[in-house]
Length: 109
Image (cartoon, rainbow, N blue to C red; front, side):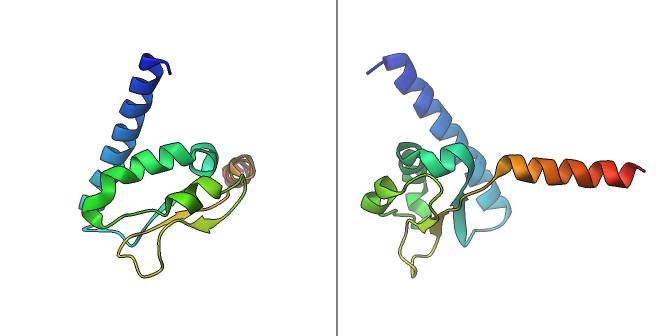
């Protein structure tokens, strides 16, 4: 209900959509958009708002499925025959950072 918070969310979602849209243009299209990490896995309302900017690509997520996903779930939010598909993939960011750091340190020797 806070207007400043709502505006901040709008700016965040617009910025993410603009960033992704830039990559879509640079790659001349995409097959899929994947949400991971804290926001991607847990923020159904953010996923919905971000994807609302991608109607020009034919992105129409299933809102019931989007809202029903739970932490750690992996799901497709679009239909398998949609032109651009949207997925949620669980990640373990801390483990990835630890493995990358270990590899970097190992290569310094």
